[in-house]
Amino acid sequence: METLSIRKLTPTEHNAWDKYVDTHPQGSFFHLSGWLDVIQSVFGHRHHYMLAEQDKQVVGVLPLFEQKSWLFGHSLVSTPFCVYGGALADSDSVREKLEEAAYELGCNLNVDYVELRDRNPVESKGPWVTHSHHTSFGCTLPDDPEQILTAIKRKQRAVIRHAQKNALSWDNSDNPAECFDLYSESVRNLGTPVFSDKLFTSLKQQFGEQCETLIIRDHAQTPVSGVLSFYYKGEVLPYYGGGTLDARDLKSNDFMYFQLMQLAHQKGIRQFDFGRSKNDSGSYKYKKHWGMEETPLNYRVALVKAQALPNLSPNNPKYRYFIQLWQKLPLSLSRRLGPLLSKYLG
Image 1 (cartoon, rainbow, N blue to C red):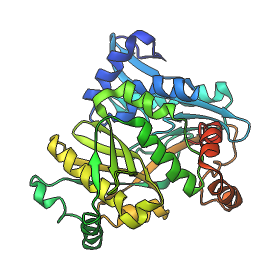
Image 2 (cartoon, one colour):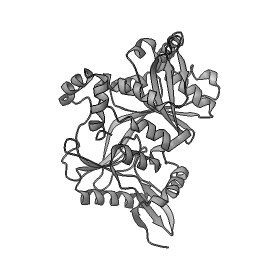
Image 3 (spheres, one colour):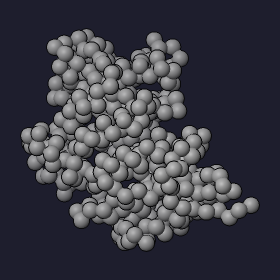
Image 4 (cartoon, rainbow, N blue to C red):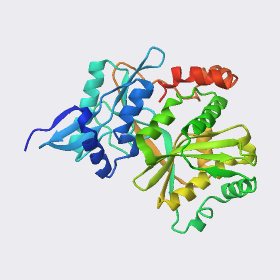
């Protein structure tokens, strides 16, 4: 048996990488090689995709990106702008070798820390320390589409029924630009810098039918809510969603996620992944109302130069005045300035 080798992924090996992710039981949409092109082209971050090989066969993969900013620090992350990441491998020993290589790379690059966004719990060894600040939500869609609504918690079910009386309509034809406009307005209202609009178009171009937008319009056909979702391995994941100020009264976001469940069901999808939220945040409380299963996300970090992880959370009191200022920016200005900051906040 040949010795295990770990090296950087080459441009001609993307298909082999994706085949491994597709067949690995823990392979997620965020492990796919398409993110290499998206993140590199949209944000300009340098990739360090590690491939483990033995007997000329892929036996493990670890997607990594280097983020470097004088304001937000220097890190090596698997994977920024993504919910899940970390190493996939044929065995624990191969996974540990990949993680050792990631830490060694972090030391060579002199980063502040290395972060692995594992979806499933992994025992922390060596320099790795587990932190759990996020929770993911999800559910299995009933076989009978008529039961999708009844499976939702009673209070949230009432909200959806209220929304259905508001003459809302939906459109899931490809429209990343319109979806981005709704998303960017939503995050501005929350006081958060928005990504470049190139992200949405790049995701659609890269992933094709695995990436879909859903737009909700009011009675006057004005867009009020939108979400960009990913489809992979029998699961739908609404990822970038938001709405206008009118969305709250219209309950159009609630209408949108319920409609997405129905559309996914029509495609034969049975798993609904509502994504991650910061614990005790507004997003966390909103998703909790749906009655879905909660799963703590146990990410792991290895400190290199840093003495502690930076707290980039919007809940950090030091960002309070910045958030209040950002909420008052004209939408056009927030869209110009946002990408300069958000590229380091993934």
